[in-house]
Every structure is written in structure tokens, then in C-alpha cells.
Image (cartoon, rainbow, N blue to C red; front, side, top):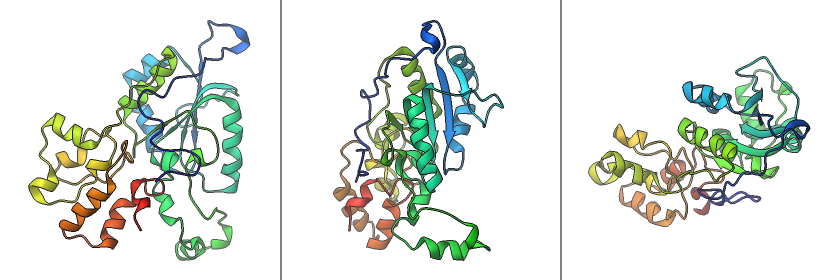
Length: 279
């Protein structure tokens, strides 16, 4: 269920205590610096940060955005007090670059399913990547890639993982604010089902027999898909202590065969998700 180097459940609410901030030149009045980095991804999580609008302006008053190519042409060198990393590791160059970023970052937080679980691109893991390249690209000889797409925590130490595809902007502001305040981030570790109940959304499995990963998926999306009468796709990854076997059996009762169930479990977070424990 977890990657070899980190348990995805080990970084939930109450465990994100920030390290002491490093002020440039020893001046305690200097604002902490923020850097935002991109690896293999769609940029959706960085756009979530930009979508914070008024909240981002308030945060910017307390932190110096030193490196954020998607938002600014001003790019200052490290070290940085806080780094946000989007995307998975898919090339040898990126596998080296993430170590440089880790060395420059006092606190490193991964944001989104790609960075925390390998993302959709991790669906290639365990397959013949060369066959995919030959099928997709007109000139496969120009493509250089690793056999797998892996989360950042498979390569370097990560201080906190913020889930989602994309992340929830409210959770992102909470994590940044917690770092600035030197307190743990208050991120829920319960399931999407709790958010369905909070907004009064009927259970789509009970009401309509629609397969839904909500019972084993971490809350964070405000139960968006069930609110539109669709089953949860597991965008936020596994909740704390998911009962995968029970949901697997329930999907069987709903008429799904093993292949259909595997496809449901191996989606946004399949590489480190609960579906990995099913054969």
C-alpha cells in the first residue's frame, strides 16, 4: 500500500510540525522564502495556488515568494525556507534535480497526486514503457525516460504530503499558514464519506448502486463527485486505515469483475494506493 520509503498515512493531521525557519543572514525580521517546483505533472496544483487569489495576497505579505516560474519572472537563488513540489519523478535528470532542491529547502512539502503517489503517469509502472513510447511518439529515439513514475518521497525526505488531483486550495493555505505559525497543519485524515454526510449528499452506492471509492479515500474534495451523483474516483488517495477488503467485496456485490475493480482502485494514486494490496 505504501511506497518503499514513506507510509502515505504517516503524514496526516497533527504530524506536520514545521522546522524552525531560517532567516537570511541571521536577521530574525527577514521574511521566510518560498519556492515552487515542477516535475512531471499537468500544473493543476500550481494553478490551485494561483487560484487562492485574495488568500495568496495575504500570505504574500508574510512570505517572500522567491522562486515560482509559473507566476513570476523573478527567480531568486536558495536556500529556501519552504519548498512546494508538484509532479512525479520520470526522468534521470529529475531524479538528480530533486536532491538539489531538497538540499536547498529547510521544509519540503509535496503537493498533489503526482508528487505524493506518482500520479496518472504511474499507470505505466510495471508495463513495457518502450512499447508505449513507440506507439505514441513519431520519433521515439528522442524520448529519454525512466521505466517508472514515482513520488518525490521515493527519492528524498519529505516533510509533509498534501494530497489531491488537484489539491484543495483551502488545505494548501492551511499548510502554508501552519508553517508560518510554527504549528501542525490541520488536514483531515477521515474519508470522503464524512464530507458527503456533512453536505447532506445521499450515498451513491446505497441509493443507486454506483461504485464509489469514497469509503477508503481521504477527505479533501468536499465530496464533489458524489454531489453530482457520481462515485468518488479516489483523487485524494487512501484515508487513514482504509478497509479495502470490505469495499472490494462490496464492488463484487455491485456486479464488478476483478478487472473492473482493479481499474477502479488503480487510478490517480494507484502506485501507492490501497489497490496495491489486491492481487
